[in-house]
Image (cartoon, rainbow, N blue to C red; front, side, top):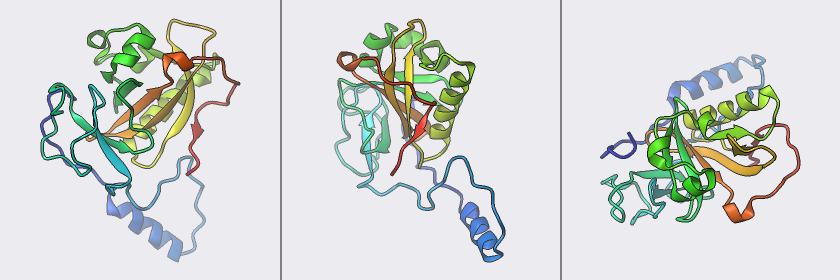
Amino acid sequence: MYTKLASAALVHHPSSFYIYLSKAAMRNEPQARPQLRLVAEPLDRPQDRAWFCGHCAAPAPEPTAPTARVCPGCGFGVLLAARVDVVPGRCDAYMVIDSSLLVQVLSRGAENLLAVPEELAINRSFAELLAPADAEAKGSGQLASAIAAAAADDEVSFHVLVRPWNVFGVRMRAKVAPCGPPRAALIVLEPANALRAVPDARGPQRDKR
């Protein structure tokens, strides 16, 4: 999907969501606090997002939405957009996970870090490569929820603690954020030379912006 797509349009939140909120507010109806808060304005301004190649992480030639989605540098990857503060660099270990929680991109850095070649990772569940650092059963559900939320919503991002699926006693920091189109979750892992033990955490931590 990510290596054959030639063009796509950015998807915005439906306006009916905001209309519903406005009417509810006018009626002063009490509303339950949602677990994940949506920001009313979609983050689609050029200065807030940057385009990069999903295969080699090279930045797009222009900061605005490209007319051609194939990377002009490597010729293999599709250009994706993400928030400027989470766009990976060429040497970063990162993954792109689609809304079905399947791996669509595994960078060279992630291949080395996880000891899995990209061709064997594509269209496999992320859980076959990454596991939550939390050994409790709830950790797996929290990690999957964070990835699914990022793949569905342009305005959420999380910091999580993970480990390679077959390695115990190791903790890596990772950032999970939206990217696309098409909608997906970008997971940027710590570089291998920064791998170290970190304090315990209570699952995915929502970024404070």
